[in-house]
Amino acid sequence: MQKYALKEAIVSFTNILVPYDGSDHAKEALREAMKMVEGNTDASIHVAEISAPPQDLVFSSFNQTGFGMGVSLVSKEDFADAVQERTEESDKKLEADVADIVKDFKGNLTVEVIYGIYTVETIIETAQRYECDLICMGSRGLGAIRGMLGSVSFGVLRNSDIPVLVCK
Image (cartoon, rainbow, N blue to C red):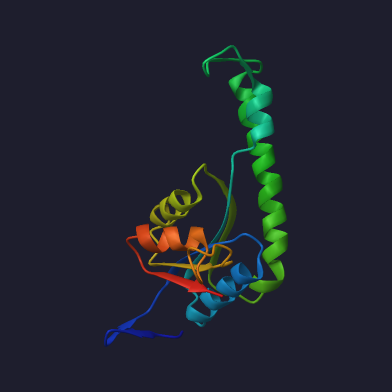
């Protein structure tokens, strides 16, 4: 297990959230998180792909009658079953995508797709839900205004109460 010195204090992270979008930077963040907890079988890594809710299900389930008021065309149970089925399919795809990277990881691993409207807030809420002590994420660096950081990583850095490690 690697330890990191922060202002003359030794910090050991054991519960890490890795937001994952399939990019090379996200894969590097996942590898870095695994290095940070290497040898600690009690450590946990939570790989979370943040995705917009399945809009095709939402729009096909509501008949818009004006001003945002809708009448459901399917029962709540059928809608919930459809969302659950879509979530399970998405989780399996994500698990397959990270399988080669995490195959030797000996700690606790969670891999899931999480639906959220606002990516930054959803990442922070997910870290809080898992009681993470670190968010380790990639940065695509696509925004010129944000300089070297992407807008999502910049938003998480600015709004998170726990440490954030951004990997490129």
